[in-house]
Image (tube, rainbow over all chains, first blue to last red; front, side, top):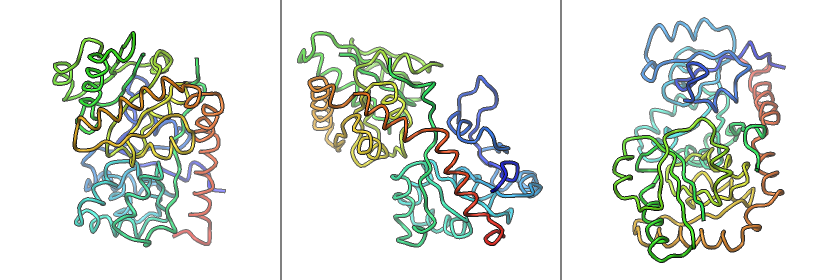
Length: 148
Length: 182
C-alpha cells in the first residue's frame, strides 16, 4: 500500500486558509496528503521545479497546466488528474492536443473528475490513453449537503 | 415556484438564458408565485442585473449553500463547457432537482441519479428558453419523480468521500507498486 506521505499533490488551485474557498473541493479530496500549491504561471519556474524534485515519492498533478508540466519536467512518476477547461482546449485546438501528448504519455494514469471530461480529453487521441484513463469524482460530504 | 442558479457570472454559465426564461415565466404568469435567485460573482454580473426581470434576485457568494438548495424547488444552470458541475450534485444531495445542459458534464449525474432533466441549449435563445421552461413545468408537475429519498441516496453514494479515498488508494497502489514504479 502506498503511504499518504509518499504522495505529493501539485496544484495551482487550493485554499490559502480556512476563509479561502477556491479549490475547496480539491482540499476535500486530498486533505490527508501533502500539497504543494503553485502559481498559475509556475509551469516553468525553476524554484518550483526544485521543490517538486525534492519530494521523494509520487505526484498527483491536478490540471495539465500548470501542474502537469511541472510533474513532467521533474521526472518523477505522476498521475495526471484532469479537472477542467484544459480538457476542452485539447479537444478544440490541435496544437494544445500536440503539446499535451508528451505529458499524457509519461503519466502513469489519467484520472478525471467526470466521465464527460474523460471523453473530452480522449477525443483527439482516439484509443491511445483509454486503458490508463479512470474517473475519480471529487468527494462531497453528506454531512454538508443533505435534504431539509 | 422557487428557482436557484449558482455559478461564476461568466458567459458560459448562460445566466442570460435564466434571465430570459424568468422573464417569460413572469410574463406568461406560468406560476402563481415566482422567485429566481442567482448566486454569482464575476464580470457578467452587472449586465445580468440590467436584463433581470423583477422576480429575479442576486446574491453574492455565500458561505453555506445548503440553505439555498433547501429554499429552492428546482436548480437551473444551462451552462456549457461544464466538466462535471459540483453544484448540480450538491443540489440533488440537498434534495433539490436540477435542470442542466444535455451533452455536458451533468449528463452522468442525471443519468445515474435521476434527479432532474437535461435540456438542449442551442444557438437559438428562444428555443433554449422554451426548453428550460418546459423542463421547469415538467418538474413542478411531477416533483416526486425527480426528487425522492432514493435519488438523494444515489447522489450520496456517487460522491461518498470514504469510497473516493479508497479509489485513490487503489489507483496509487496500482500505478506505483514496486514492479511498476519508475
